[in-house]
Image 1 (cartoon, helix red, strand yellow):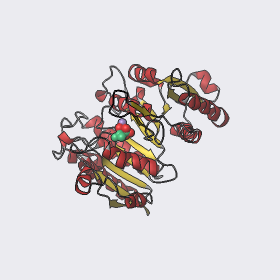
Image 2 (image 1 turned 60 degrees about the vertical axis):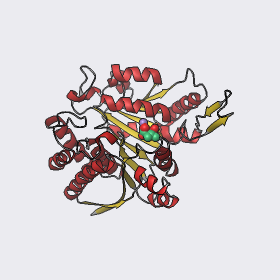
Image 3 (image 1 turned 90 degrees about the vertical axis):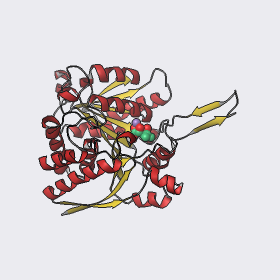
Image 4 (image 1 turned 120 degrees about the horizontal axis):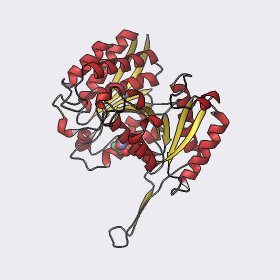
Length: 368
Ligand code: IPM
Ligand code: MN
């Protein structure tokens, strides 16, 4: 029996409620596929910060580093000033554990849940690979003349060749693996004849950010040309990307982009797949401790009512199993989620599912 130590940070707000359902489903999958997940719980988040005035002790970072995977509920508390918990826990773990990829699959499971007219599940099935350690999120910058009429605020976008290239390589590799040799349906016959299997779109802003995205673009073509001849390379400016994600989401297979553009377009992606109730993501260090989370946040107004949708957390658990190399159980969870969303769930929105949070977890566990 394979066994994996898992760190669990249920966190704030609705985090504990959705994590309970994710673990319910992971346990059902473990029984079926003969796995053992060994959970160690960490008390982190707003409540702990208010109690101790410390977002996260150094010793916790060192402990978390030793786990292959971390399952995270939500971080964010109405009584804590914005930025403290985000920087002190979420961004700190992403950076210190070198989770340099933020992976966000966007897949529509049922046409009923798509806000876009006439789009079907086969039209919305793409993945965003967001660079997760650099760009505008490193905290580099500062103030000059703070608080005076001459104040200057500088926020620097950091793009290293090493950081950009490892992100691009991950994205190319991911695009190659994703369809297991079956060419992506958006490719033209002549592209398939030329040996292309998948498409990777670089989302940037080469027309204005002429340093940062010049580096991205050069690295993109250099890496792609040399090592990934089977992947079609495409480019889209970020503003055009937001337009096409609404108008023609079927144009995308895998998208790779920097930290801030990725942050923005993945929320748009979450909406086109049916909302925060179903959107999951992974913060990945391909060689180390990776962290999986529902991307919806702590939702204070729904806390403790049993109305929040746990499917995003359940899907985060599924991504975690996939990362751990447990493809069979991961696929079974996804199939169960698809079945439940198609056959049972009335809406993916909190309070409108037709079931309580715990009942949705029960339905997915039973469908496995
Ligand atoms: C996300 C979140 C975070 C981010 C916040 C909470 C710091 O919005 O995971 O996309 O901006 O990366
Ligand atoms: Mn975000």
